[in-house]
Image 1 (cartoon, rainbow, N blue to C red):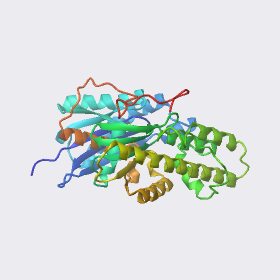
Image 2 (cartoon, one colour; image 1 turned 45 degrees about the vertical axis):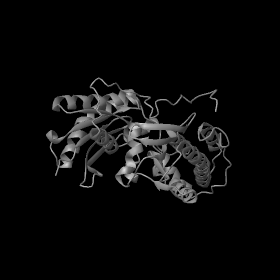
Image 3 (tube, rainbow, N blue to C red; image 1 turned 180 degrees about the vertical axis):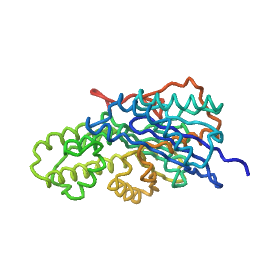
Image 4 (spheres, rainbow, N blue to C red; image 1 turned 90 degrees about the vertical axis):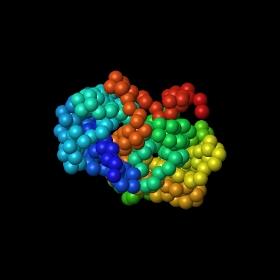
Length: 358
């Protein structure tokens, strides 16, 4: 039996220092041997958001220990590693540089191939850990920094169908939580509060709902929450506003996903299997999962999510991309730069800010 590749994945794009050891089982499916994540929530919560300089310093302090722990817990030895895969973008450049530099140095010292990974591709492929995922498929990537629909044709082959023209959905969740007095990162708590509230209590805007194709906008929704939060008088008001926000997001994504289905089907003439993947940190939201599952049943799509514990930033997904690229011998030189705005679709035009024409 031939030796299965062993990949070390490293992730430091924002505020998690993470390392993972990835290989394959006898069926060729990805297998996580270890997945270590060091969160920086306690460092940043007093500031209400991630402070790049503090995040980078924490990465420097932890990365050596995190990588050693990932190797130790995998039950394998460092000289068995076949390649090192590090996130090169997108993300905060001071944070990216830590993991990228460490990965390059380790690859050079071990004389092993180095693979620079797009963090978003890690999210895109993460459902491979718990499902049989074949190309092509429609992807909705929703996280703290990104919200976009993409047609996934293969490894490193993406076509963007729609994107946010202002704020990411995860940012809108976190900002709403902050306005409701929830400590950072409060986005996941919105869903909990929403269960206690009336989703029809507040009428919130749904920006560009009926125009702009499957492009998204959440800035106006955040502004409305800011205005309404100033008039909260009770805990029930807080619950009702959280529920109204969750319901509004559900309605926006229900409508925009229907548009994305049409765009996806129009762009690919013959689709053998209609698959819809939802990935990124916000994909852990159970209310959204239920809505997407219902919608896909209506439209004849198979719904696929990553495991809940792999929705947020992690190194297992980085190692997975590294594994896929290792098998195709797609390596990078050690001078590959950090790329804080690295897009999956390199041909997609920039759509953000005032004056954007849809």
